[in-house]
Length: 104
Image (cartoon, rainbow, N blue to C red; front, side, top):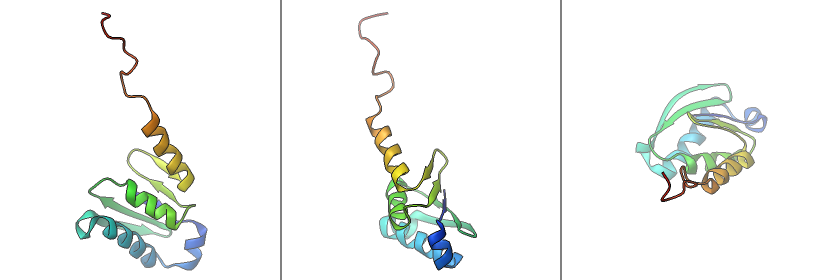
């Protein structure tokens, strides 16, 4: 997973401070065993979570609502996009829900 912080944080924090913020949020949610730092390049921090990442993404985007988060399955362009995509997933019909019973 990767978070690219917005210009607000780029102007105010060192790369190490950004890593520390990600680690602090992940560790508060999961404890020390839930987060592995991978790399930092400018405003982008790459890391691995070993558990459900939605809580961490929501916390990071609450800290920086204009940040971009990339996961293996999705790209979230800020907090509003994350919330919209989460709502769309939870409101989506289940696969096969339209199948009619009793018909071959």
